[in-house]
Amino acid sequence: MTARRLDGRVAIVTGAGCVGPGWGNGRATCVRFAEEGARIFAVDLRPESMEETVALTRAAGGEIETRICDVTDRTAVDAMVAACIERFDRIDILVNNVGGSAPGGAAELSEEEWDRQIAVNLKSVFLTTHAVLPHMIAQRWGAIVNVSSTSGLRWTGAPQVAYASAKAAIVQFSRVTAVQYAPHGVRVNTVIPGQLHTPMVEARLARQRTGGDVAALLAARQRRIPLGFMGDGRDTANAALFLASDEARFVTGAEIVVDGGMTARCD
Image (tube, rainbow, N blue to C red; front, top):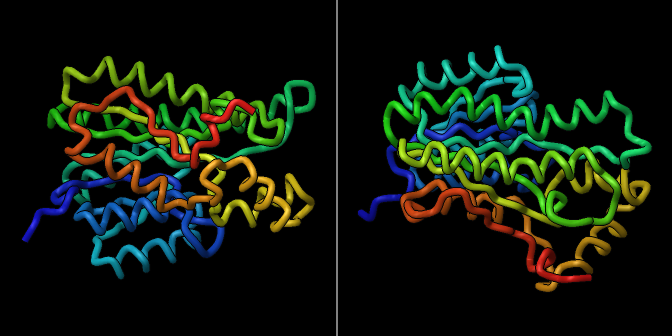
């Protein structure tokens, strides 16, 4: 039997839940990693959001444990990582997938909303990375995959300055961390998805962008994509799988853009 790509690995996936049925990035990552042999420690703030993730992961033959955690709170993050070590005795992979956008430019956004956006999208990446690195360094192997967004690279249809700033910062955070900890056997890379059709598009973005008109939002997003169709969370998961696997043993401090060619356009 051919070995699966993540056999024997333990993966923490944050933002493992989903706001509705379908393939969000975290849910798809849990299932895809489990298909390749990883044991999954799934983390989210809302237990009900992980019910389908757990069912799909187990249906794929995977082992999954869940943990409710506010990844913007250091005490909660440290306890979450300790719980993963207690359950699985190691941490090999961290996928930082928590995030969410709020509309508003520099003149409109409140200071409180700016702080919330930076905490959810950027501070969470720092806190989880800070907590897992000692374990990865001790075993001299680790793969951290941070999920950014094309909003951190270019204008994507709406002013969301805090979200865009945080997602841009994730890329440089990943590069700096990758260089520093490469001698310890830890790789750090970034997946940059864009214009995916995930449950969040219908549950949240349509209200923000098109007054709840999901069809109008999907059409506007698809027009930006040279390939002519929108991906979903499974495309993000496949990129994360490559970066987490030994196939990417010589890849660190790098980014994979998963956007159907949108960022490559100059218009």
